[in-house]
Image (tube, rainbow, N blue to C red; front, side):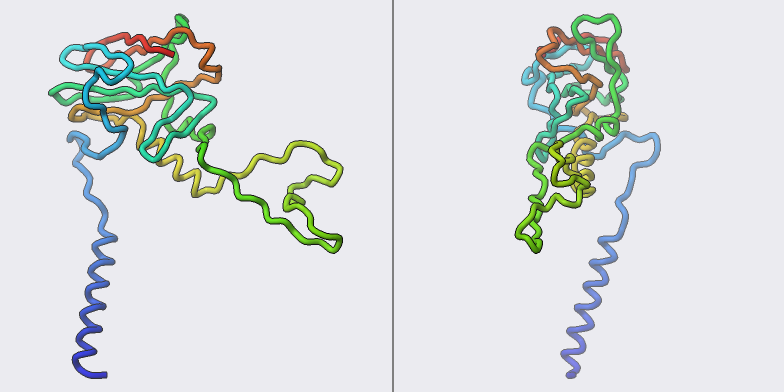
Length: 228
């Protein structure tokens, strides 16, 4: 090997080591007590008027829109049968401490309002309408071709429904990340900010006749009437 070739190999190895080291460097985090700057939630719309309803609360405007059993996300909309979603947004010139716990939802005029649920609670019911289970591979037997479902514990005479498809861990993790990114961010934030809040509700949307989103937080108190 010539001296020039050895020098080129050494420079390439050094560059790869530097790249690997920089990729492994952890991201810096803000000091405790400072305003949160990480990007979470949904992109706020240009003005509060672009949402279904809005209310003025002190120096701030809170806008909201009912999203039913859907969970809108940047990477595509998910669905959930056990929860309903409201997209909320805050507007103002000052920073404001945000929390989903500041909200509750009154359905059909009931006296007790529904409390918000953490995004992690809805993960067991979240589905991706675009995900399709893989087609089972047909197996060949001595007597010919048989279906690929023979390992599911169902005999030839079993006419019951097939077991539900198992969602791969990778798909479940990706859905959880999409829900987390879309949830309303918490902590002190520069406005505008927007995100989703979740409420436990297993009924059909057609059975909802009235919705009131209640807010009681650092900005003040407000009641926002939404359209089912």
